[in-house]
Image 1 (cartoon, rainbow over the protein chains, first blue to last red):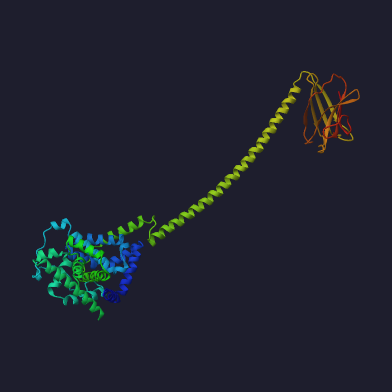
Image 2 (image 1 turned 135 degrees about the horizontal axis):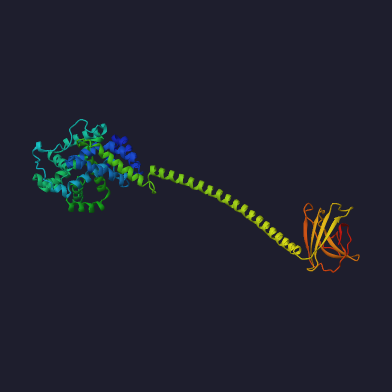
Length: 205
Length: 268
């Protein structure tokens, strides 16, 4: 199914992925201009992702800088056989953001009190803008994902949103929103599996 | 789906969302290390799905200083690595250019040094030749000085006989000669001028003629007829008050009795 997802996404991303792989090859070859191109391509998306997790611009900018520094220094670790450049740098960005979020400094900060049942107190976890990324292909992908999210249950979607954009662990979600840990795990697993099926189906259509 | 697969899927979804506890993460890493192809494929798929969720993040623009810092880092690192053997095409090109430039500098410097060393060698060879020539000149001068000193010792004698010789009309009309004879010391100084150069197989021979009998006083050769030539004559012992000196041209090394033409003649 990965073949369908990646290859189908690849049908949409062919030019982008080819471009990204070319950029990564140049970055591996220590071409600084390639890093500049990659930054121009993804800085808004990644910064938005980091900001949604860390909530602070200064911290988010530091993290974004760390991400691109790691891309520059660890470019050799990117494995073409295990996924796209996009997946690699987004995973890297999330890992960096989560690491910082779960650092002692952040843990000392007072956690924001929210409720899954109260829509108003939610930070806007993801954008509803029509073209927030100023990138037609990414916007098209965002629309497909949004459509897929609309087809999973509200509870599954909210767990995924909180985990993904707030960087909360399953146990933190369970504690924070007073939901049994097993239920959080089940909602997360079922939601992701459903999303996987929907995205593959969506793309196959 | 087996329990094992259920467990893997549950941990995998938590992992791709960074939502596992530390112990669960360790467990998942163990399962991942032993995962089969289907499980690895599921892992890659879920990572791709999770990454797709980033497209929903509200796009925000970081400040310009972020990119500036990143590019400073990249260019700084790139420049610092330019001297190393790395995979970078750009840096490799820079390194290559530096290497080529260094090679050219090395080659030109080597060629320059080669020419310089050759020039020095030629100079040294020339200097050596000059030194050898000067050494020869010095030796010649020293020899000349020594010879002149020897001649002077003859002239310094208290009593000397002076015998003037004139050129023979038929063989050497412009010839001139002089014998300064230190009878007490048994030595004489012979001075000749305007004498033809002798062939290589000939020598001039000086004769002291007493009572009509010629006595050989030595042989000599004249290389430069234009200048006066001086010769020292050893072992010229005689108590004779009268006599004559004559110079003939004889075979190389001289003969017991004169056989050749006479060139100079002078009476005491």
